[in-house]
Image 1 (cartoon, rainbow, N blue to C red):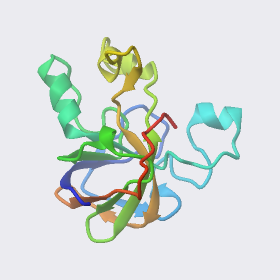
Image 2 (cartoon, rainbow, N blue to C red; image 1 turned 90 degrees about the vertical axis):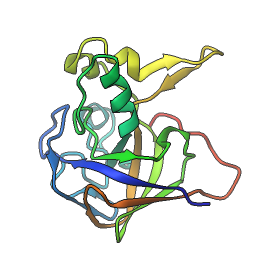
Image 3 (cartoon, rainbow, N blue to C red; image 1 turned 30 degrees about the vertical axis):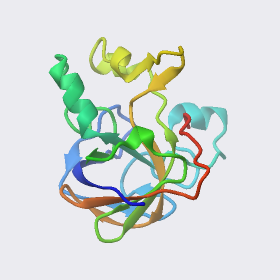
Image 4 (tube, helix red, strand yellow; image 1 turned 180 degrees about the vertical axis):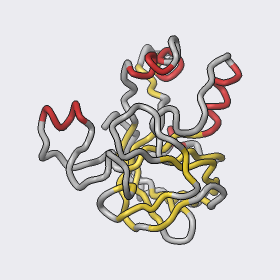
Length: 182
């Protein structure tokens, strides 16, 4: 089964800042992440996770967020352009949060990422814009926590990714495992 969307924007930052500036293109490196990005590496690069155990595998090499979420919060009065939430790839037309663990996204001509889980939003989101955290985390009708701040992935095949590139979704074999924070 394959659904198709596209890349709305790409971003990277060599420093550990919350937001990432957008770029004309990024290069994904197999097993590492985004070339030149502070979060690229075989082992975990997020500072809080490095402090706990620097030998953990990096399941957060590439952060993706859907443009539709940014449009939704913009309509509610927030100003959240691509890259502002720290994502590397802003997508359009792909329901990222509905994907299962192991879903593969073929992006552009060569790049392939595999979805590992949900981004666990942190309080830095309210530091970016007060009140935004409540839009990124909520509860469903059963009282379960719902995280909306995008998905994390690892790079299976490298390649250059640019705005406008197509995204094809390949689902893993069933049974599908729902996304959980990584």
